[in-house]
Structures are given as C-alpha cells and as structure tokens.
Amino acid sequence: MKCLLKEKGRESLLAGVLLIVVVAVLIFTVMRSRQGGIASVDMEKIVNAHPAMQEAITTFQKEISNRQTELNKMKGEEKVKEQQKMQQEISQIAMRLQQEAMDKIKKDIEQVARKKGYTFVIEKNSIIVGGRDITEDVLAVLRQRTQKEAEQKKTDVSEMPMIPVK
Image 1 (cartoon, rainbow, N blue to C red):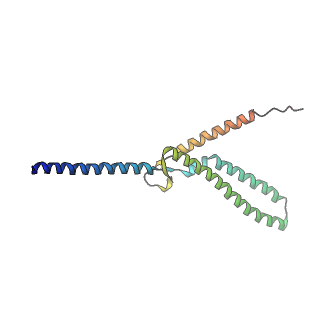
Image 2 (image 1 turned 90 degrees about the vertical axis):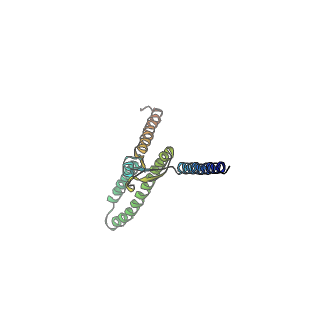
Image 3 (image 1 turned 30 degrees about the vertical axis):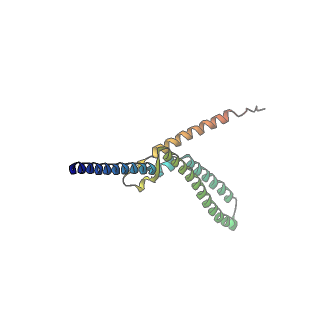
C-alpha cells in the first residue's frame, strides 16, 4: 500500500512539474509573440532613395535660386542685411523640408514593420548582431508607391481636356 502511495505521489509530482513547464512555455510564447521582433534599416540608403527627400532637395535648391536672384538685384548695406535675413530663413526652410521628408520616411518604415510584425526598428549602424534588415522591403514599398504616383500623374494629364490653339 505504501508503495502504491509513493508511486501515485511521484506521478502527481511529475504531472505538476510537467504542468508548470507547459504553462511556462505557453507564457513565454505569448510574451514573445506580443513583443514582436527587432528589425534594422539602413537609413542612409533609404534617405538617398526616398522620393520625399529628393523632392525636399529640389524644393530647397529652387528656393535658394529664387532668393539668390532677389539678392543679386540689391546693392550695398541693403544687400548685406537681406543676405543675413535670407540665411536664417533658408536654414529654417531646410529644417522644415528635412523634417517633412523624415516624417514620410518614418511612416513608410512603420508601415513595413507593422506588416512584418516587428515592434522595434533600429538604424542598422547601431546594431552589432541581430535583427532582420528590412531596408529592401522599405525600398520596395517606395518603388511601388513612386510607380503608382507616376502612373496617376500620367492619368491625370491624359484626362485633361485639350484646348485648341488659335
């Protein structure tokens, strides 16, 4: 009888330990799935390829050119004062354009990260080991959107009514 009780006690203990292990594995799995993963991106590559940054650069260059034309028309002290004022304005414009472009880039990175189930995205140069590089995925999204926007512009232009020239 004692032997039977000892055997049942061992079985109960074994079942209890097994239950604890199963629960621990389940908790770990759930926590891991909620946390998502870590991805990395090569920001330099994305910034250089992103249409928003290219657009910001073009807009900035036009702004500088326009202001330089205005400045060339001035002379003397008026020119010096206006040049200082323009430098401050151009600096503010550059920061605004850069921030707008970076907001668009961040939005695209977040879109890819959400789609792929990543919770954290870190700049590639900040990681020594680990994380999946999603740079190419982000660039693919950029290419698709750029292509759609180009097609939309073509459609918009082709739908414009033709005005006869007299």
